[in-house]
Amino acid sequence: MSEITIAIDAMGGDNGCEPIIDGLIQALDEAKFKAILVGNQDEILSYLPQYYLDAIEIVHCEDVISMSDAATDALKRKESSIFQAVELVRDGKANGVVSAGHSGATMTLATLRIGRLPHVNKPPLATLMPTNAGSKSLLLDVGAVTDCKPRNLYEFAVMGKAYAQEVMGISRPRIGLLSNGEEDSKGNDLTKETFPLLKDITGFVGNVEGRDIFNGSVDVIVTDGFTGNIVLKTSEGVASAIIDLMRQNIKKSIPAKIGALLMKRKVFTNLKKQVDYAEYGGAPLLGVNGCAIISHGSSNAKAIKNAIFQAIKFANSDINKKIEEALEEHK
Image 1 (spheres, rainbow, N blue to C red):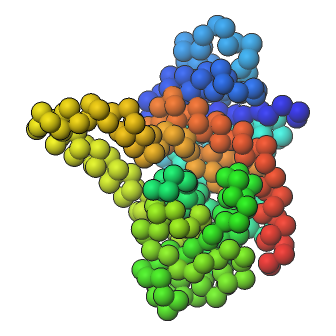
Image 2 (image 1 turned 135 degrees about the vertical axis):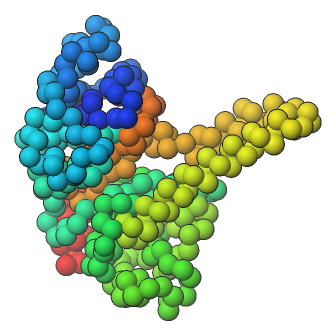
Image 3 (image 1 turned 90 degrees about the vertical axis):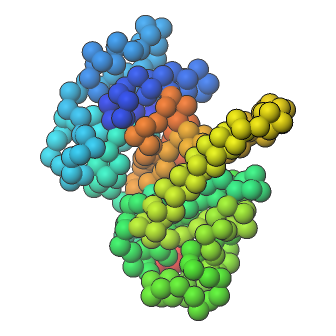
């Protein structure tokens, strides 16, 4: 395929297909790529302006994997929107898939239907985190592999480094192992056993603590999916709480209202932009033989647009080739 083609699960989000289609339209207005919307054709057409009909292919299917369904059910429900979207990547008809639906189902299908890269035991989910240095750090795993072995974390580090280089444009990524202290001796059994393995990776700086995710001192942070998911959800909650607390306190004082008005454009707008998950769009599942971007179920149009941009950037990179080469070298 000469032109990048992205398959989008139109039905999986919490808010129906409207924000997903709106996000796709915004992406098409800003970038050149081919799009395939997968889902109920009647619903899709009710939200899709006629102007875009020639630019978007629709693959009709009526089944939708709901958030309450078991992830493994997706393998049996071959007429579901997420199954069909993943199949487009498996069959070479799309370069990547974007879904705001059942994340477990998407990860299961991507891993088993698209397949894993050579030497990848378990694909991790990676996400970008804001830092006070103005850069982004990459945290992985954030929920795909809750029970990890040292070998898994080693592979996560190799894949995270490749993503930082190929997609984030960081020539020499600094890699840290998330622990409860910076000293080499700190950590639980998993991190203590993983630490000597990571010493073989160029750019490994040692153990890092939670604060290092946000201070710009490290580019890639490696942890198990259980810990990473808690970190991610806690970070989102703290960011939201801080913004809400600021709004509440601003309302209590006239001088504060005046100050907030003066800072609105430069300070508050930039702050909201940095902590808003919609700015990143979604999380790539690394280590699969293709591209799968998993978005929040509550994603708005902006988040879907940016998830599509992530998929395009991923598809245009050599990341999977770099991961294969790096794991082959270190196996």
